[in-house]
Every structure is written in C-alpha cells, then in structure tokens.
Length: 194
Image 1: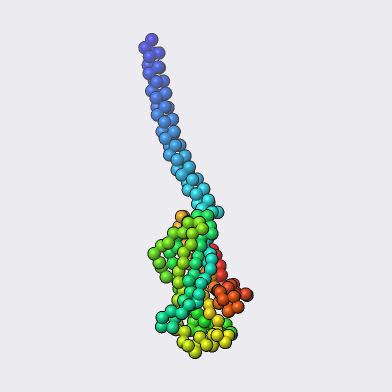
Image 2: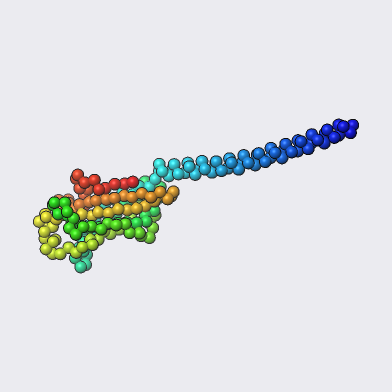
C-alpha cells in the first residue's frame, strides 16, 4: 500500500507540475494573442482611414478685391470632400501678377505658414485670405486692364488625418475677365492633391 501511495504522490506532483506548465503556456498564448489582436485592430483602423481618408479641395475663390496700401486679396474657400476629418496645420498662398510671357512679376511667395489647427469634418468648409505681397500701383492695374498682366492665386494647404498621415493640396487659379472669377488655367499642371 505504501508503494501505491508513493506512486500516487509522485504522479500527483507530476500532474500538478503539468498543470502549472499548461497554465503558463495558456498565459503566454493569451499575451501573444492579445498583442496580435491589438496589432490587427490597429492595422485595420489604419487601412480604414487610408481608404476613407480626408481630401481637401478648393471649392471657390472670391475676388480679387483691393485692400489698403495697394495690395490685392482674394478669399479662398476649401472643403473636406473626404470621409474622415482633416486637421489643417499650414497654409501658403499668394496673389500675384503674371506677364503674357509667363514670368511672375516680382516672383511669388506661397511658403507654408503654420496656423492654429483647424479640423474639418466631411463636408465642412474653411475660408482664408490670399494677399499680394507686392503693391499693385495704379499704372500696373491699368496695364492689367489692357491685358498685359493677369492676376493669379497660387497656394498650398497641408493637413493630416486621424493617423497623422500628412497630405497637401496645391492650387493655381487665374482671374478670367470674361466670367469675372478665378478659373483653373488651361495647360497648367500646378494643382494637385496627395
């Protein structure tokens, strides 16, 4: 009987150690499953946002109008036509004159400038102003009226999505005297959306 008791005690210890080993394996498996599930959920979220991303476009431009001290300006309205929110962090724009030969008078400065972040949900709009860096004198405005110069609005908008992926929208419009509005110039490929 003592042999059976010793054998039973040995097997009880073996079964107990086996149970502990199975418990540790189960804990390790649960840890790795939790990590892999979290990674899969994050990947699915990033893929969803990538396919349902925000997209900023220029809806319309109003102007140009004369400001103080000979500067011209235009109001630019952008809209998020994407599915998810867009956080706009920087905008660059300039209102410039361009000669018939294609040269911009005085160059242009549409460098990105950081702004207080603006969040646009799908369908929401935001309006900002593009102001000429150079002064439009009376004689230059006359030359523009007779067709030697044309007024252009050039700019870029930098924004990001919920995953922190940055994108840019560039725009380039020329003022059309016939329709009294800014239009996309023919043959120009300066507009883009990332």
